[in-house]
Length: 200
Image (cartoon, one colour):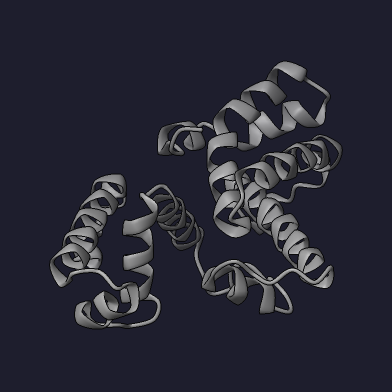
């Protein structure tokens, strides 16, 4: 699947969900078209497996069709609701995988699997902050794996470029280039938010 598009996700609104809640299959098809790339990218990022993510998404959309009438506008945007639902199901699947004796395949999987609960945004987090957080997550998930990994080590684990080079057994110049290219792509992908200085 292609990268999620901010334009398509911005077309998901309460009116569209209301039509889906009334059983409008065309509206449901539009909802799928506008959200599936974002949700698939998120599921792949959490599960680390495209096949599992595709299967999970089928279950998620079935749940959306059945539960869309329960969507509460007071608890966030439609996109935030869809993302929370997908994230919750993916984390459930990780826990089920761990219970069957599988180990998490990377550090992000391990961090997510260890979470006891996924409370979502705090009451103090504004809707705009939540949407920005989701946009950043989708943008990071859309990066090539090598760039994504280098950026995670730099910004989530706080490693220096030299430490990342040692950890990945890669030349320092390669690590610097990956981080620079990845950050440039993130800045381009998040231009609509205007806070590019935060990504430098």
